[in-house]
Image 1: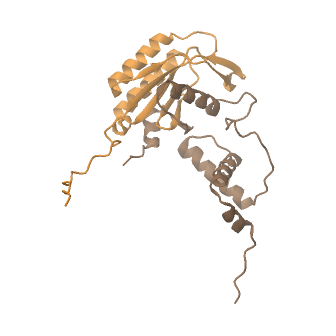
Image 2: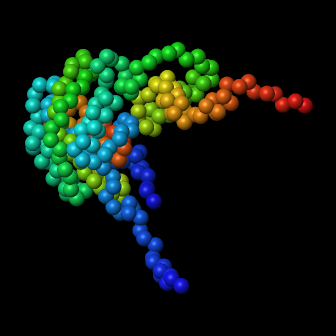
Image 3: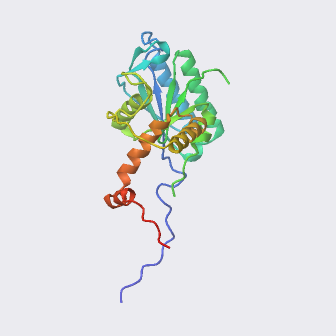
Length: 137
Length: 121
């Protein structure tokens, strides 16, 4: 008679709450809202990586992509942009932590203000968030 | 089990507005795809008007009851208030139509269009 395998303890699911499975994406712009004035993009990419590293444990910046969008609040002026896309994987607990969110929000507002943006875009999980009010909190 | 993120809490903590769903995946191609998705969905289309799904190229007149329109207006008002998404009633109608069409079987459609038989007493 074949030997019965001893029952093993129930394994933890691979994608449990503690693992980094939430993707946070930040778009670092290349130009100001006027579509002409260049932003000090390397400085903001560095600052974003440092912030993500400190708050969430790491991030990756992907090289420039080319984009264009129409700014309706400025008479429909086309704004050409070459944003850098910064990816950061984190946990549900870390992204819902009030202090982490405040730090991420502060960074986006500072970048929006200093780089004179109309909007700073952020993706968390499968949702797009827009930050348009850059007043200091 | 996967825990659902509390998006309202995240929006509040960030001081951000929820704008809508995207499909975000990892890696360089995921990043580029996401960028194109965001540009297409959340920036104003080149032809003018509100941000919309670029695949919606067909337009037809759809008759509907006043009660249905009022219900659509109520739902979009709720979505605007709670989700921070600027949505018009007929955009919602188009979304419902797309979703239902993709899920509806031929047999279910036949049931919908067949006249209701009154119960005999």
